[in-house]
Length: 147
Image (cartoon, rainbow, N blue to C red; front, side, top):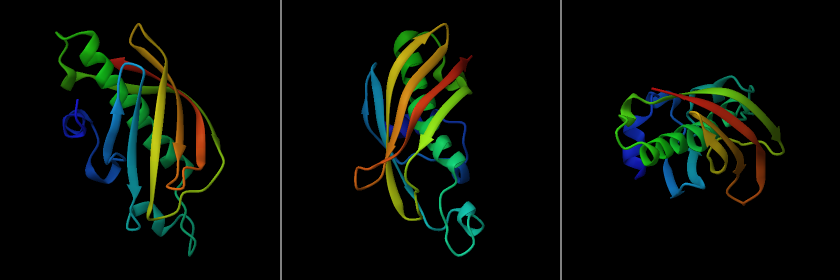
């Protein structure tokens, strides 16, 4: 499944899409990238004169790549009769530890490894690395796939 195909299935508009490309994708995990452009709407107010990416946006980026895209891929592999475009995913839990900030104009890499996928619930170990390959944040995300 290509990045372009995954993008057509995602339920996000352009102002809330945090995925540029998928580098690796298998039944075991996913690796994708996003560039936090300086003109993104949240930098104007978080924080004044020293913009930094909000933690909730970092979690959203990890969830979009490491949970939603990965979940869509797994559903498409598991049940070829299911209409992937009708699949949704609701975040059910997150436990993330933060280590470094992400500033405007930084590119990040999200790596997600499957813990389990059963009964339409996906649980993954997820980490985010900056362009220097330093750990930005890591943790566990879970979500429920809906049809």
